[in-house]
Image (cartoon, rainbow, N blue to C red; front, side, top):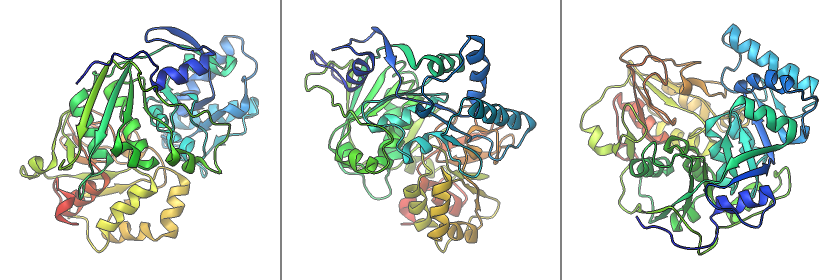
Length: 427
């Protein structure tokens, strides 16, 4: 670890300076930023009341607002149905054209990513903590509360404090059976769940430059578990290629200055790094997976899904390991793609057959088992291996259920063996 001593701007500072119309900003400064994209999911239903209470009549720019129903799809409780109705009525009242309702739905962050709603240089906000994921586009993307969102919907602006930045530089090549999820767990092992509180985490280095957008999304997604305000990767040719033909508004690609001032710098070499696993009851309780395998921990449920790791690349990777195998007796294996379009891709490529023939359940796209509110809730004392992002007590159901966080292919190896397993043993 070294202390940065430059005088230039970090990536987050560059974006926030642009959003606030200032030549430069410094950590701790309060800025009034113009928002490029506002996103709401079911939590956004709590925004509608404050929006009207403050006297607002119209959304500042209907073309910059996206609503995506994703947690309870279709509605599984009366309460969820009410939230959906509030959002449908608000979208109709405000003539909001970008509403991803049941049948054209997906996890909100994936919807923003695959439809090009967030682009380099943006200030994007959403009513979900994992909005950080979109920072992989070279944007400042962050979660905000319902009353903050009400003000954004009315004014198109948001005041916020400029965060200091932690730079994570990564070099080396990921080995067999090691994925971006293992890398972000390794970073969590270093930073911990509070080490990046109200900070930007900026990923760089040769390994990151070699990653495609799906891997970058996984990294930025789990900066939320570090307490970060945002996670970011500077835009490059991979970003431009991903957004070609889908970007919904003009891009303003920015890069950190070579002499940017970082609060902290972390260097990680992934050469020889094994798969990793976050053990109960915290995402930073990270250990090398081979060590945990030796403990022969039996599982009751396996979950492949969430905004962290349920993109088509993740599911293809997992299906390759699953093909011709069977889910172990006594294990429930739930696979939930991150969007309807990913579900359709899985259908066309025969991936759904691979999982269902093995004894897994392949669900419609939603947050699914990740948040403990819909499909796959855990009973007391049950153990789950999950490709999601959190394993705090009660995250997926019972408070004393135990959740192990791992890569998608590690979940498949675990489902086949019936206990926490290393995917390299099956590749």
